[in-house]
Image 1 (spheres, one colour):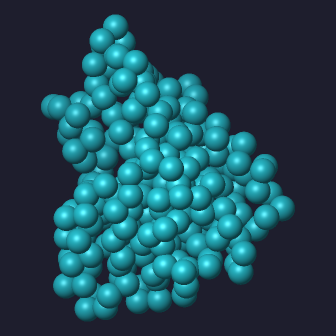
Image 2 (cartoon, one colour):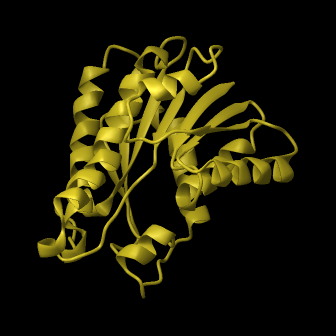
Image 3 (cartoon, rainbow, N blue to C red):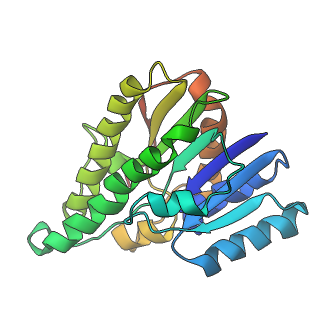
Length: 235
């Protein structure tokens, strides 16, 4: 059995990953998002598809203290095998129009929210078995990749997430916890439409989710502290 926590599991790539994880009845999948209605929809869809109940919605805002998350997790959850930090926030506007609030919220979700998740779950990671923290990044934050003028705050936050990944791999190197980051390219999601309204991505959320799901479950056997580009286009 694997206990898996996934943030941003109510839409896009996160929803597709959640449904693919739920296919295995030995997986216990805890979905985290702000919208309880959306989470319930995904859980119901998983049950309808597979006829077993192993998806558990948890309403939690990543911009709030991690103690709120700990209170919502079952006491029986003593080991988290996989933590997928998938939730993200993006604004698309010229640099001159990026407000301080835009910058703050972008980093609150994309960086500080990840830190809160990891710190809040640290006592459950790597305890009984080796754990894997997978941070879902972006080619926008990958060094040397093409950058886009309207996505300055988003790209900067994803660059910080990549560096956080490398740093935490060293922090946890002797604690049975691997930390990796997938820098995703263009995938057809609502977030992509916000960034590039007229662009058609070469991959659907379901197609990318197949790789993300595999890597989340198996990637820590081959990688640690790596930021890996996964992109057919950017965008």
